[in-house]
Every structure is written in C-alpha cells, then in structure tokens.
Image 1 (cartoon, rainbow, N blue to C red):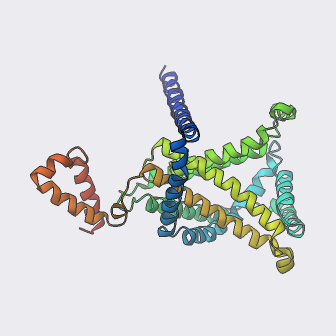
Image 2 (image 1 turned 60 degrees about the horizontal axis):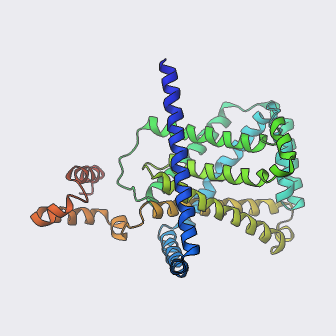
Image 3 (image 1 turned 45 degrees about the vertical axis):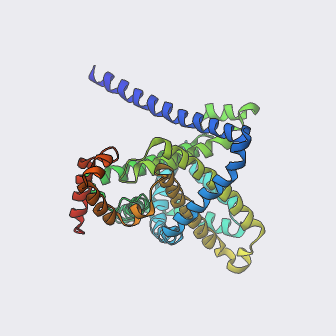
Length: 360
C-alpha cells in the first residue's frame, strides 16, 4: 500500500512538471504570436531583443565565459581518455548498443578522412587489447577526473548565479548529485545510440511520415540534457520556467553552432594540410571549447531569465547591499516599506551566511 502511494505521488509530481513546462511553452508561443500580430509590439520587438542581447553579451564578458570555457576544456580532456577507455571495455558486451559501429559511423561523417581513419585504428587497437581489463587504477583516475570536472562546473554555475555566499552542501548531497549526473548522462547516451537499433523504433522510423523524428529526437535529448544539467548541478533552486526557456534557447544555439562549425571545418579551413593525420586533435579541442562556451553562456541566459531585474550591485557587491539594507531597516518609515520586499528572517539568514564566510 505504501509503495503504491509512493508511485502515485511520483507519477503526480512528474505530471505536474510536464504540465508546468507545457504551460510555459504555451505562454511563450502566445507572446510570440502577439509580437508578430500586433504592429506596436512588432516594432518594439527588435529593440527589446537588441537590448537583451547587449545585456547578455555584457554578462558573458563580465563572467569571463571564454576563459572559464578554456579551463573546462582542459579538465574535460583529463577525463575523456579514461572515460572512453571505460566505454570501450563495457560497450562491446552490450550488443543492443552496437556502439563500435555507430561510433565509427559518427567519426567517419564528422571528421576529415585521414583523421577519421586514425581514430578508427586507435579504437580497433583498444578493442583488441581490452582483454587486459579495466583495472582499479584506471577506475580511480576516471572517478577523480570526473568528480573534479563536476566540482568545477558546479562552482562556475554557482558563481554565475551569484551564489558565492550560499551555504555549502554536505558531502552526501554532492556525491548523490555527482553519480546522478553520471547515470543520467549514460542513460541519454544509451538512448541516443540504441534508439535506432530497437526493432520497434527501427520499423517506425521506416515510415515516411515519422522520419522527421530522426531530426527531432537528438534536439529533444540535447534539450533534456541541458535542462537536467542546469537543474541538478547548481546549489540554488531555479524556476522551472527559467530552466525551460534557458535550456531551449541554448539548444537552439547549439544546433546552429554545430551547423556553422561543420561548414567552417569542411569549407573554410585547411586543418588537414597543416596537421596531417593529427588534424582530429585541434578540431576535437575546438569543438569541446565551443560546447563549453555554449553551456556556460546558457547558464548566464538562465540567470538573466530567472532574475531579470537583478542589479549589478547586488551581484558584484552583496556585502554593501546588506549594509545599506540594514541602515534602511533602522529607519522606521523605510522599515514599513521594506517589510513587503524582504523579511527580517531572510535578512538574518543572509547575514549569517556572510558571517560564516568571515567577511563581516
């Protein structure tokens, strides 16, 4: 009885989530319709979009997103090789994935021929030597590098969301979030690689009317992955509407960036002429860097959507804001006006958080 009630509660919560996200989508579509159909709003739309993009560019510059993306690219490389080795050791034992052939197909389509051949040969050698086993030392390297990447991403997200003074999470919460992120990422990867291998889905995709799903499914998975990352990694709770809008537009930007990146690599560069067989390395590094720029730019977008009226002073000098607020609370007239904006209980918690940091 208790388990049935728990399942019912979880189903109800999932239904409420889906309903709230659907409501956000409907509201945004209605607003877009009004912008298009009403002449006055249509005239103001470009002005509003331009101002928002200027603010977004200013925030991205002030948050040093390009520099942070370079750091995350380096840390990602530390974890890529052991993670790839782990996949190579495990994936061949999962026949429904057929990961080896799918990976080669992706490499063949997205890399220059000479580089693609070098990567495929490297993968074949690893498959031949996989009998050596994935020992505990390799597993520890994978775990440490993955957790380091997780911590850096979380701290970066918290800083962008202006959570420098937030109470630190306990170790258990961090570990749960860390493994939750890994499990969810693997699930998305398995779904992405195995969706066309499942007999039922393969048959459905042969139907001409349903072939458009081949273009929609990767977009949806990318969108879900970004929304999950923005929801789980930060230490602060973000509004669902902000998560939905930020993840959606970040996914749109990612799709456009991938198309431009492919066009640039294939038509406007001579990477292979300069690097030869090693051309895959700079392309791979550049693509990881572009991905991190988009992901961090997305969390800046989420922050701006979640707190559109946040003043730069509140974000950059929170201690000064607290002191000014305390002085305003000491004034009887201003005290009455501030009660509707911030409670003394919330202000006390904020002051305690600052005192724990040792800055007051």
